[in-house]
Image (cartoon, rainbow, N blue to C red; front, side, top):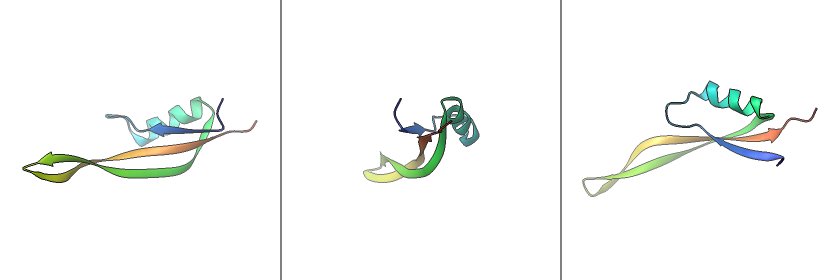
Length: 61
């Protein structure tokens, strides 16, 4: 199993649900990253939504 893994918050998933999924797989969050997702509207690029990704570190037992 890798020591670090990225977990993307899926559409319709809450932050708490993503963090619970991380715990189930044996990871703890060490970093939160957000980046804008752009769409083209009327010839211009506008922000559609934010994509949130957590970086998890394997929990040592």
